[in-house]
Structure formats: structure tokens, C-alpha cells
Image (cartoon, rainbow, N blue to C red; front, side, top):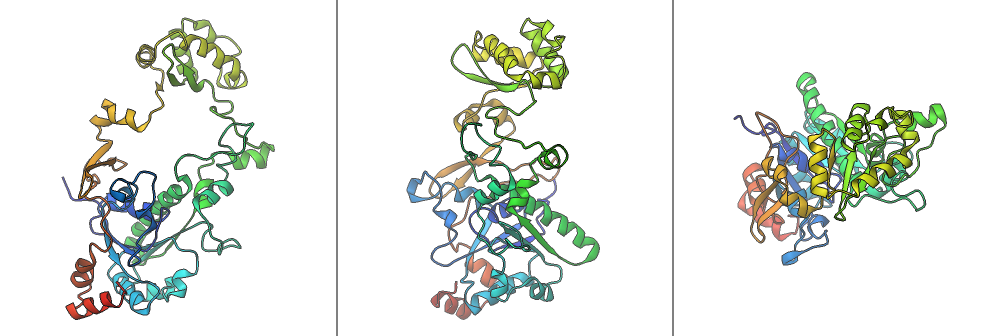
Length: 398
């Protein structure tokens, strides 16, 4: 097996919270050296985020900062800015998610950084991008979700827009930033030059909105909130079982619905003009869901699932974290891994995605302590003398 696929890439991560750091997490999962620069004394606020805090520590931080090195540096000081510039000279990627103009105020505009290191890829994640009238605005993930369209179509039709229970907008922007970074690194192999990757949260959300834009432009159709179903996609819903559980069944393709109808003992449904085609089932979604619910309500969940799986009908439970730990498929594919941690012992977290056959990524360490790698990076990589290192530390720069 060869080494980690991004093992020759060095990333200087200046961002905080999630939109930038999740991009760093993805790159680090596949071997990139991530040098995370944090404010001395405070660090990334993600160190304090999350509901549960055993030992007074965040359980979110060890995940989003996994495989990273932590150094401290006051970017508001000339000495701190000089340290970052020296790191950039030795880096392949600079990753940040500050408000547009922040790097420029610190004397680190893309133009200057490319003078120092022409091969540098500068990845910038913001709410609204680096250009346009909204660029200067503060932009959190929730705002991007609202303006990108996903909030409007999430939830029940008789209630205000809902949100997913995760930071969806931030993660989408970070994922697209990661794609852009890898594309820019690939293009650099041809041109020899780096470039700016501009990932905006609202645009990353918009990119996931399927045919919403042309539906309005061409047909004047505005998607609305539809609760647990997608309009005109049926059957694809959660259905009750005899023992009080719920099972999600997705049989909206014609051939799959035929198999479901046979399992139900109602093969005639597949030939019924109300349900025979994808369009017809979508138009008669409510009554079809009721027919299926009556059938599922008479069968225990385990028995129902076994029958559906054997019959080639996609189905599954709606999992909680507890269910994931107990599932044999999760275990067989190592979807959840346990990582050594100085306080938590073995800390469980989601594994690297996607899986590569020859050069898979890995979780090699949980999120580091604040400034854990100061000496390794500043003295080892940058070559600071002991006196320089001690002086910067005493002055609060690092």
C-alpha cells in the first residue's frame, strides 16, 4: 500500500469555527500536513462548542481538528504576520474563512502572497464570496442556507422554514472549497502557478438545489415545503410498523414499485393507471402512502425489513447515533473509528470518506491541544532560534 495521497501537501489553516476548518479536516484526512494557526490564549472557538463537554472539553473539536497541528500566533501583530508569511513560503495551500478584506488589512493579499510563493493555492471560504455587493457582510452558515434556498423547502408546509440539525451550509461550502483546492493543485501541475479558490456558503447551498432554478425560470413553479416527502416522488416516505417503529421505503422507480406491490400481495397496483408510472404515483401520492401504511402497520419492523431487502426494495430504519454503533454494516466498513485521546481514552468519530482502494485516508490523531506544535513548527520548520522562540512567546505573539 502506498502512502497517504496528499502526504506531500502542506496547508496553513487560518480559519476558525467550521466553514474553513472542515475543508482542512477533509484535506488532512488524506494526508495533507495541516498547520492550524490559532489565537494565543483563546484558540479556535470550536474548542468550546458542542452540547456535551466531558472533562470540560468540546467533543466537536477533536473531530474537526483531527490530523492537524496547532500553533499559536497573533495575526494582528506585525511579528505574527511575518511568521505566517514565512509559513506561506513553505506551503502549498493557505486556507482562511475571514470576512473579505481581512487578509488584505494584515498585509497578506493574494497578490503579495503570490509574489512570495507563486505556486500557492489560496482557498477562501466566506458567506457571500470575495466579490459582489454582499461580500463585506458577515455571513454565517444559517444565512447561506436561507439565501441559497434550502431553508425555504425544509420542514412542514404549515410551519415556518426549518433547519437541519447540523451546520449544513458551512459544511457544504467547506466541501466545495476542498474540491476547488484539489482542482487548483492539479491545475498547478500544468501551469506552475497557484490561484484563489473562492467558496461562498450561499452558492454552495444553491449548487445542491437540483432543478429549483430552471423550474421557476421555465415553468413559474416555486418549490415549497413538503414535510417528509418530495413532490411527485412516490412512494418514498416513512411508514409505521406493528411494533411502533417506522421504516423508510423508497420504491419510486417503476420496476421497484412493481416489486413492492408484489410483496404487499397487491400486484394489481403496479398495473393500476393511478400508480403504474412515476408521474401517476406522484400525482396520487397521498392515497398510495395510505395504502402502503395500512400494509406496513400490520408487520413488525424486523420482519418487514427482511422482506423488503429480500424483495429488492430499498428500505431502512431512521438511525440515531446509538443505532449506528450497533449496526454490523457500519462495523464491517469501519464507518466509525476510535482514536486515542489523552482525556477521553478512545474517542469514537466518523471515519474518512470516500474510501480509496490503494491510498486510503486515515484518522491519525484527534484535535490537538492549543499550541501543541509551536516548537515543532516554529523551531523545526521555520528555524527560529531558542532566543527568538522564547522572545515571541514572552511577548504573547505565539
